[in-house]
Length: 500
Image 1: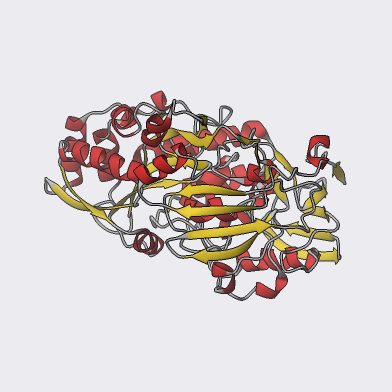
Image 2 (image 1 turned 135 degrees about the horizontal axis):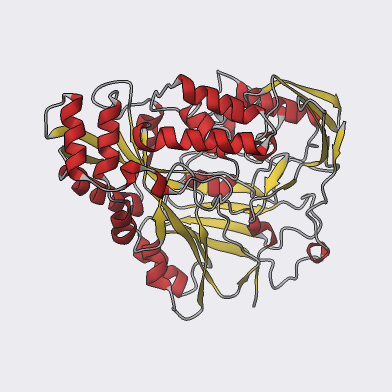
């Protein structure tokens, strides 16, 4: 057995008890109301920011440098053939209801995410796991169908929940129960979500705050005023427009990083006209990505391909994609070759975020100059997600999360039958590349496979990738210890404090 024993993430500085001055409830301003709090069912950012790393934790965790660290598993071993993972669980971990977190809960969690009845959008991340077994109360063994290079990264996104909720699709949506540093206390819809300190948290001295209050404030101007006057201490993961508005204000500071998430135009390839790859290619030729960055992101971002440029060892340079050179005439010629009548009338569902609305308007104008006639359909978030989940769209404008490993960008989204392949896309050669890249530990072979996947998807895939923005968080200068995470997680709030 190859022993992988990783150093714990508890630094000496974190062993100190929080001072009474810093033990306060942190007031946070969010722009959207979460649609639920079940970490296996709801992956939209408003929910993710509340639950990930705050209420829930996985066996592993990803830090701000995109490295995998121990979390609820303090160590693990991997068999020489890469098909058996044995995790030693961290002792003295308790769920918020006071019960001990044990191997049976981990096994139940894996079954829950894999269950067709639960229908988790995260299921594809665990598709390599054939069996999960509790060897003893503190040891879990995973048997894999084939080796899985991204498994440890993927496990950081799989929240461990109590075994008692395995078959329940409702309870965690409004009454979450995790192992994280903060526990659920109250949710007033369209008002706030309040989390309180988990006194039994396994990391000594954490959290430093006594609670988190996520204030649901849809109006950007109201959030900005609240930050400037001290009503809110943090506006996490804001867009460039908001960042520009608060930059330089007294008592306010900005943190930033390059986002792993990408903005996109999604296409339903199960029916005309986007079942024709020439029409999908025309969409790409019609789009001017730099114009989107300049007009909708105020220059705070970069034109985006299938992988974030933050993944320097994986991402193909967008200059390698012919369709990324805007050419409206070429787009119109492709529509003619596809045999569709122009202007081609289509409807685009729009996620209700201001940056996405701005992007949709720019893309609408660009497509309309290239043989399309686009109608924007602005929806409330619940309806947008429902239509997305049910593939009830022609086009949609949205934003998708990213990960340190390319598998998480591609496998669940573009593999045939993938758990978030709402586009109904299927390509046997892409499937083969994704399967081979997932099952080999050879870094060069994975790189070659993902290069090929990017080149196949960029121009004729079901997604027109648009931008990767600069991710900002605005905060009061008395907030200490908070880091902006490239994956939008607020997990560093456990070590954040408020100075007097």
